[in-house]
Amino acid sequence: MGKVLLLILIVSCSYSGFSQTSVQIALLKYSGGGDWYANPTSLPNLIKFCNENLNTNIDADPATVDVGSPEIFNYPLVHMTGHGNVVFSNQDLKNLRDYLTGGGFLHISDNYGLDKFIRREMKRVFPEADFIELPFDHPIYHQKYEFNQGLPKIHEHDDKAPEGYGLFYEGHMVCFYDYECDLGDGWEDPEVHKDSEATRLKALKMGANIVQFVFTQ
Image (cartoon, rainbow, N blue to C red; front, top):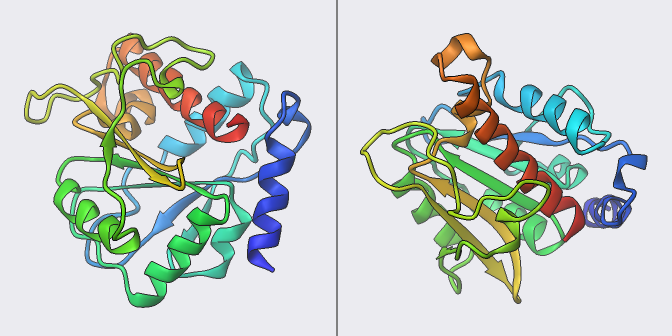
């Protein structure tokens, strides 16, 4: 039943008038000790920005869903973040793979320190696939907003260039991973990180591109 519901949601969102359909997106809860709950104001701010600038009709309150829960199939887009360890159980692995191969989409934002753990666990979800760095001409960077140099740099961390990776199943991108970028921090309330308005706007615009890509691909 979950897969059927998810596919109905995806179809209803995947046309030029996707603003007609109210949907909800979710924050992914996982085990292992990492702070999956980081950036509590991120998704509400991104949703508000998308509803105002993309004419989407996304529920203002994002859900929280456990990676192993059948409820994940209710959400066409799930966001994941954190700084630390991630451990997926066997049930988590199967559920997440079924979700992603059934039409769902996962956006992962490394909040610094997540990288080695999420790469390990996503390899367990898709043993046959690797994260592929996306070229700057990939459509995710050219939705409503143009990012001709790929991901914007939001927080410095190790002073590396931001990198955007895709995970593909049967030629279809099912996961987008932003690394050394920290989009989620950029979506937070202004007083949290005290980023400039220009930096926050870049992060929100790139987030809107992800949403538009997911809903219309």
